[in-house]
Image (cartoon, rainbow, N blue to C red; front, top):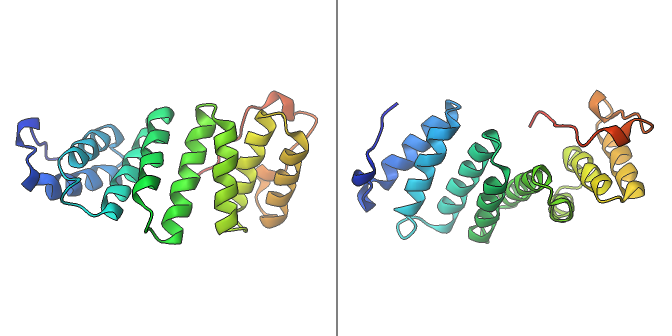
Length: 180
């Protein structure tokens, strides 16, 4: 991978920084990608439109999530949402979903429930959002709401074995991490 020295980060290099960041991101080099996304954002906000900024913030948030820096990831997704007021529906769903997942991982369960509810208002058939919202409801002590979400996820995706929970043992589990 090509490295770019900090002193070279001038306004004219942000497109290269963005491309380098995306390449590192696609290679799974999340630490390097996160740093480069950060530098691209610092040096390009005036040159990029809001959707481009939102996309870079989203990708940086994903990198931070992979690095288990969930609080910082949550902040990136939150900022991405503030820049994405004109984003398409699928982008906003994705940003809310990722912010909710990060919120769960850093204990912001009330915020996660709110975000998963937004996801479901835009895409009612999202069984992953139902299941994840169930775990946040459980963490908040809203057991009936949690069970309703778990059962709705099971009905929406009957082939997903992870949705078949043993309610007698559920108190011993904090969450189930899904593959996405």
